[in-house]
Image (cartoon, one colour):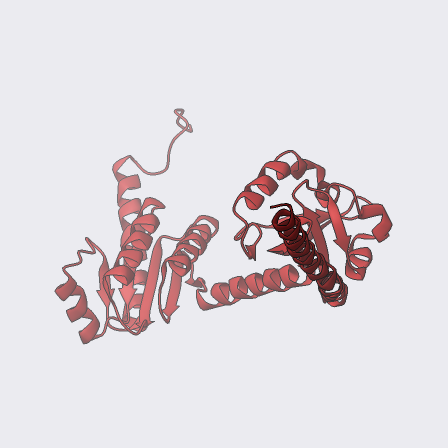
Length: 313
């Protein structure tokens, strides 16, 4: 029995030692591999074209690259170990830890604040518009998030320039022309969508107010098709002009346009229309004469110009 026990214990000890050594060797063998992967990750972060900030679940910065130093004016030694809120403008800091915690609760690669204008703060306190992409990375020390930060100053400047150019083109495409005293012409060319219709109406009302116009001619000869949406925009423009005391005349009504309006069942009320701009101008001038005659008749019915109440000797 003793011989069997001794033999069994020796066998078990040999097996355990061999098993333990095998596991120990596996761990030792994997260390160079982990070190290589870590070095590769650091190299990728350092060589990235964007500013890269790696943050742990505690919110502290673990790693930054050279682009961060260039963009924010810090030395990397000043940032590593600090809370990432160091780079967040003061008026956004209060809610940032909550947002950060929400991301770590559901980590996935995505842009930060999609649809929002994001800002970061430099060392000197100045703020810059940025675009940020977030990517979770699992390391041997736990989960970290890699934030790629890009300065959006130039892109936003270009977008603003495009907006201004678009607004200028819209203004040129909807000019309000004073062709006669108290007569305005609004030539409409191309498709009329909601944004353009709103600018068109705004420009027309401003011109009516400044010129004291009494007649407005809407020339639609340049509108390719009349559908329900276009007709509704025109009707709203006419109604707005009426509220300003101006009579509206529609010109450039082609036979197919008239048929389309009738087919859609659109009622333009008392809106007058003419085939050509020339006919519309003639109607506008005649309307002005009629209004002037009516005003003169009204004055005459009250005994001429207003009197002061005392007769001259």
